[in-house]
Picture: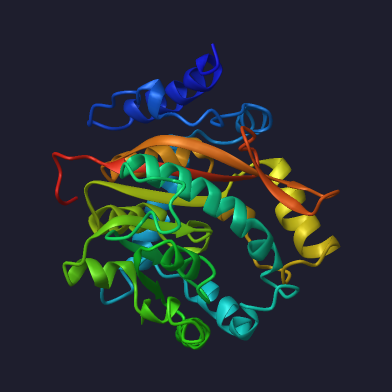
Length: 323
């Protein structure tokens, strides 16, 4: 009975995605599901007053396509977003600076990543370096907040970011430790790495998709970078009224954790939309969990509440080596 409610909610998302895709979907077996999955708290309530996920995804793709016609090559980059992060690149490792929320959230994100990827790759989660021998890529790595702990857990890590200042900060910080100095940092994009034929055992893009111009194309690139039966992890913010209140009004204007304008509510994606976009990119979502902030302890916790921050773990279909 532990999995009955989460499974029903997961099935609803997958069934909805099935209606707009020609690819068959098989609901993941319960043994692979994290007990913290989907919550209907604010997501369903807010969705009732919003366009359907299918309509929203089509609108996003249409807008992105019109933008891409004005560029020389396919890209999911949003120049305005790049400028925002370039302006505060020097503060990546200031735990009380603009990236304080990520510093606080990182242990919780890593707990989910360690658990799911150890299970996916049949690794010992109690090992100090469970990811030894595996190749990971951190897409939109910023200053390396995620890349460094992944390297310490044994993974061969590549970190990429389209902001040159971010990459320089990441390299400088990583070089302070012999273990993390092995990280391969590049100022490039996922699309360019796809063109180079690069592939990885696990592809991670955390708190990135809400800042790209074309989420669908971005996820296709993530999929192309993932080996068949490899793992893809993506985290973002739900497009719910609760997310608007907490992630924008509270975080940017009241608590001032983030510079004003860091996030645009219209760029957020619901869990259903993320599931649909990933499925179209040949990635089947197996597990989701929410991140909830406890203001009393000042810590983030894993939760079944995905009404604001959430993370998705999926696997690349074995039968498709490319998009």
